[in-house]
Amino acid sequence: MDSVVIIEKGIFIVAIFAITMIMAMYSTWAERKVAAWLQDRIGPNRAGPLGLFQPLADGLKLFSKEEFIPETRNKILFLAGPAISMSVALMTSAVIPWGDKLHIAGRDVILQATDIDVALLYIFGVLSVGVYGIMIGGWASNNKFSLMSAMRAGSQMISYEVAMGLAVIALIMMSGTLSLREIAAQQSGMNWNVFYQPVGFIIFLVCSFAETNRTPFDLAECEAELIGGYHTEYSSMKMGFYLFAEYASMFISSAILAILYFGAYNYPGMQWVIENWGVNIGNTIGIAVLFAKICFFIFFYMWVRWTIPRFRYDQLMNLGWKMLIPIAIANIVITGIVILLADKFL
Amino acid sequence: MSLDTISLSGKKMEVSNKKMSFWESLYLVAIVKGLFITIRHLFTRKVTIKYPEQKRELSPVYRGQHMLKRDDQGRENCTACGLCAVACPAEAITMKAAERKPGEEHLYREEKYAEIYEINMLRCIFCGLCEEACPKDAIYLTETKVMVASASKREDFIYGKDRLVMPLEMALRNSKNKAS
Image 1 (tube, rainbow over the protein chains, first blue to last red):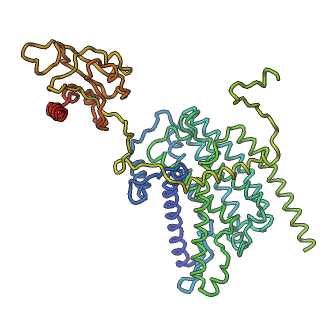
Image 2: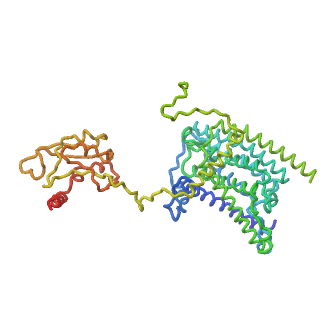
Image 3: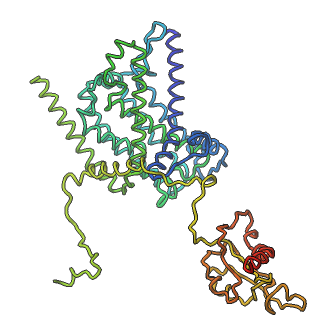
C-alpha cells in the first residue's frame, strides 16, 4: 500500500471520528430541543444562540464534576465499562460508506474507512460486544440495582439482536452481498430496499431501538425501580461516556438504517447530476443526502421517545421472542420463495 | 333494568374486554397515530415564558406582600390581639404585645401595640385569612404585586415591623388625599 493511501485513510478516519463525536454532541442538544418542542416548550436557549453551546457547557460540567468511585467496585472492570461502550460505538463507523467516491487530484477517493466484504457481519460482531460495556459496568459497580439493570439491558440486547440478524438475512438474500458499499450501490435510483422489504425494515427499526437502549425499550435505565440504571455508580465523565456512547450508537444505527433500507447516499436524479455537473458535485450532494437521512432517523428516535411509553419487561421479551423473531423468519421464507419464483419466471 | 346497569351520575361505563383485532394487536396503527399527535406539537405556539426578560402577567386581583396599616393620623392600627396569628393556616405570624406608655399616643392608636410583629415569608401562602381575621383593619395584603424578594439566608425571609409597617409619609399622604 503506498503512502498516499495511508495518509488518505488516516485523514478519513480522523474526520469520521470527529464527525461522529460532533453528531453525538449535538444529538444531546437536539434531544433536548426536540423534547422541548414536542412538549410545547422552547428548550435550551441560554448558552449561545438557540442554546447551541449547550453541549460544550454540559461537557465542561461533566469534566469538572466530582469523580466518585465506590470502594467495593472492581477497579479495572469499573474503568473498562464506559471505555468499551464508547469504543464499540465508535468502531462501527469504520465500515460505513459515507458517500460513493470523490475525484481529488486525479485519484478516486472512496468515502469509506475500510471497504471490507463482510461489513454487515463486522457491524453485528461489534454490536454484540457493546453488551459487554453495559454488563461489565453494571457488574463492576458492585451494586445490586446496577447489576439487575445490566442484566435487563444485556438480555434485551441479546434477544433483539437475534431478530435484527434475521431481518437483515432477508435483505442479504435479496442483495446477495454483505458489503455495505455494494448494498448502497444496488439501491441507486429509487430502488430503496424499504420498498422491497417493508416488514424487514420495521423489524430492523424496532430492534435498533432496543439495541441502542432507547425508549420504548430503555429498560436499562429506570429511576423508579433501579435508582438509575447500570450507570448508577458512575459519576462525572464516566457517566458522560455511557450517555455519549448511547448517542454515538444512535448516530451509527441511524446511518445503518439509512444505508440498508433508505437508499444510502442515493437520490433521484443522481446519475444525471454526475453526468452533467461532474463526479465531485454529484457525490457531495450524495453525502449531504445521506446525512439528511441520518438526521431524519435521529429525529425519529427522539420523536418516538416522546410518543410511546416504556414497555414492561415481559412485554418486551414477548415482543422480541414471540412476535419479531417469527415474523422475521416468515419474512425470510417469503423472500426466499419470491426470489426463487422471480428466478424461474422472469 | 338490573341494579348493575343503573348509573346515577350518567358516567358509568361498562369495562370492555373485547379481543383486539389483528391490526390492533400489531399496535403499529396506534403508534403511527400517536406519532402524528406528537409531531403536531412541533408547530403549536410555545408556552415558555423566558423569565428574566419576560414576566408572567399577574391577575388584577393579585395580592402581594403584607402591610401593617396606619390610620389617617399616622398611628399604627395593630393592637397585637393575635387573631391573625390564630387565623393563619401556615402559622407564619408571630408577635409580642407591649403596652403604650404616656406620650406615645401619636404612635399607637390603642393602649396595646405590637412590639414585635413578624411574618415568616417562607411559610406564608398569601391566603389572606389574616386580613379577614383582623378586627382593627391593620393587616392587609397589598395590591402592589410585589412578591417576596429572593434571599440566600433563611433569616432574611422573616419580615419584621421594619418591612411590614406602612411608611409614615404614605399614611399622611393618604389622609391628605382623603381630606381633599
